[in-house]
Length: 312
Image (cartoon, rainbow, N blue to C red; front, side, top):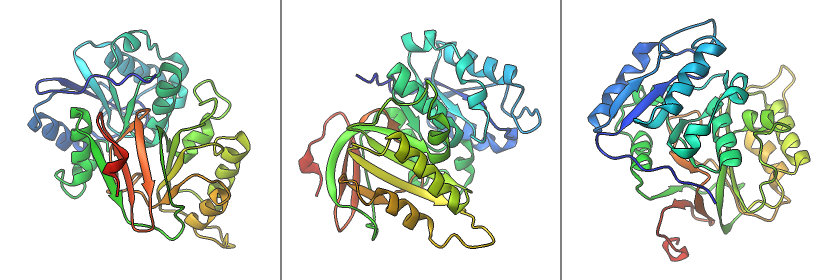
């Protein structure tokens, strides 16, 4: 069973931390201001605005900052200001003992996928794959994607929709939602953080800035590991800023992915609004979801009360 951390209420404290790449403090200021306008208190970690080469601090500094947030009883959610790279250097040194007894929402995406996978698989606690601090600066913070973070933190049920795609495979399924960044998922294979299997689960994937041939290689890694077998469903999100080699690979990114998924019997959707883009809905990783893919639309629902009749 997955534990759902307590939902937030007015006056609760959100910690902001940079456990991976560097982010200038001024790029976090709008996020801090909006969280306060939403009625939360904010505690800013020492790594926000701090820099050590590519990172927001040395491994020791980043670990200490994240550990302090995990152990702080006043903090009810930890919002990672950005992803980048660096969490795999820390994951085996994090002490989750206090966190297990007092779970809180871990929020972010990209490199934060390491925490999503480790915490949902090893600790059986749900997390939030959701917009981070930079999203509050992009196109206004009142867009539905940033607001989806607020709704998810508050425990409001969600029912997301997106348009059909020619590569979609129709069907209806229900299962625990897992996944995140494709490169990170593949990076975790063979580690103690990784799922032993994904049977009966709905897997979502997204990525940014990869070469097309590497997307093919990463899906072969998932296929050979067995992660794509026996899923309840698969959600393909944004694959943005893809790159090609001097000699073209010969297929676009969704064609590559579709070829790897076409022989599986579960429903699959393409172009779902999640990933390194403005269209990035908050998703409760580890929580039970319903997925319906029809010829007319895609629907993904999570909530404490729902039924299959809510789909149409």
